[in-house]
Length: 353
Image (cartoon, rainbow, N blue to C red; front, side, top):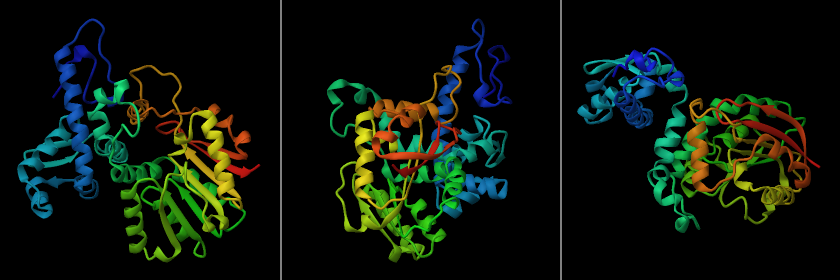
């Protein structure tokens, strides 16, 4: 769909710069574009799952009937998915064939954000009215797909945290005997660390059974199962184990906000210090609450991430919030890495106080 110039929205402009005139323009077309964008967001997530985005990226084109035959997909649906991507400028479509369009590169780069939203958090967003009712907000009132979240977070971590994380790892002045990854998700980080340190053993801990199973399967495939164990547990309540005594490096990414509010976070930091008494370094990476911005100027992922956590009743700390708890929690800050590519990402290198 082509939008009218009177609305000051053009398909040739970056989508994030879209503006609407205060005095003129077609509300019908604007709302249709919002609707079609929601459809395209689902299509983009599905296209990644099905390998369609990778084919477009690697080959520079895709033929729907051929792709559908090779992947045993319904041909009509395959064309329909391409049509949804074409509606927002991700691909150019000519009948059953498509090639990358203006926004393909950025959509491909941020594909995990769409997967997190449309696959991992689909049920949460579908149930917003029920979730918002006070009578329902008790116990585990939010449902998400933990396996899809883990897969998305693996890609999101590679896009946002990894360059700074590996810099912190390379700066370690010791080779850790044992590493623990709190909230390990798919296990990608702990497995990569074991490849980096061939004599090291690892422990991955996550509350989601599906994520733990995926991580264990990946460890088997990588011939690393003998050097790593995966534990299904809630980091916030788990008990000490003998294997924790040898842990020298702790990593924790994209779950630290679950420790909050403030007094709880201080208690959790102290618990982690006690659970791993010989830890020499704690690499803590997390998203932080954005500063107040104009409601029309959110980057990809920020709005969805913050709304999801509002719905779940999860407090998102700011950087100063984090800075205020380390001393009382038994840790000192060695170095900070301010990343802020999507949701205020930051990595703290912590030493025992």
